[in-house]
Length: 510
Image (cartoon, rainbow, N blue to C red):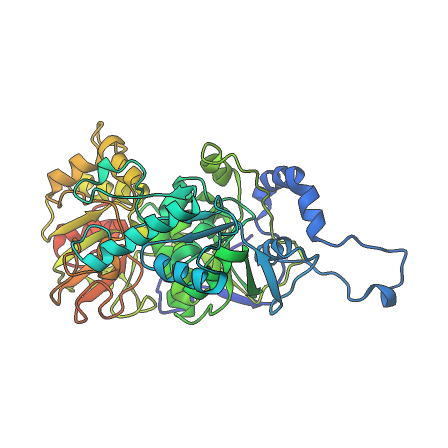
């Protein structure tokens, strides 16, 4: 697919926008891989699409069947319908329900109120419970929330409960994982073609695996606990085609900040965001997760990336549950299509106080900062820390502001201390961070991304200016309501830490 010639300025039109177009999910270079997948799953996909009955007259068969998008196909299969269109309301069978320490207690209370004190959940092996938000704190109510999770899991014999008891040493808790959205992927709960619901808005992260994943409220979660079903309205789909070679100074965070800046924080309200193109195909799984993670910041219902060999390789040793991917039909109808030439994009930030307040990083070079935060479900994955370490390694300098490192999960923490950084002669992220003067990597959790109790590590208890790899920069999001948060990629965050100002990472990544 040829990309439109575009201007690098984020304030100009960086896209071409076409209405109601239907194209195949990937450009022709990917058709071989897709065809292999379709051979494996053709029986299932055929069951979604009603067979043509050419021997009967149209008047007796009703409306002619049309192509469906990925999201429509997944929901059609989950609702046992041959055909779905945007706006349809259907009862969907849920494959995985996830909840955590913030919303779990409320969801359990609703479940017991509506189904009975002694009621049993619909399937103890399809419920995943992950404490991660307010963990390493002395706040008694936060600690009690984790106790409520534990009691419910014991009562219901929940198979997948990633518990933590010893708050003084997370490593003593072998089952503890950390941030739910990253743990779901690492523990094999994300699979193409499935429906995954979670009591957290960033559940959309799992769409990177070619599945329908979205956040729900406590009331809906309580109903799913008892029935395994939920009534959902089928969203229309926005299609984002990203082509061009990814510059070495860009990361997926720059791509999603560009998109949100283009369509606004309300531009995808209750819509599916489907990401395709040669640039998307080149991304590893963790970068695809970053892309899907922030669709909710554009108001999106879900984000989705077609599954391919990268997806299959990531999950091959993580799950034994069979799965069947689906792909958008060539004749599928998209509400809008946006095209980007990524080779022309520059490093971006989102200025306070909205994720769509987009600006070029180089345009903010005079913004003095007080701190840098690298962590969260958006920017606390292994690849995120490897990226930050690459900048520190290239500079050979020390940071000029406090730089906080919060790995998303226990596995990420292990990777920081064991994986060699490419081009470092065997040094690990932790060694490079120490040499650069960063804080020691903290215990894995959501940390200060959403503020939390006042004793939360790296929380902004004063009105500071922070460059952060997190996902939201609303007033008070990381603590103090007068704090200023600049959302950025790990490259830009690390570069800014080295100068004490918002900094374009190209200053260090030659």
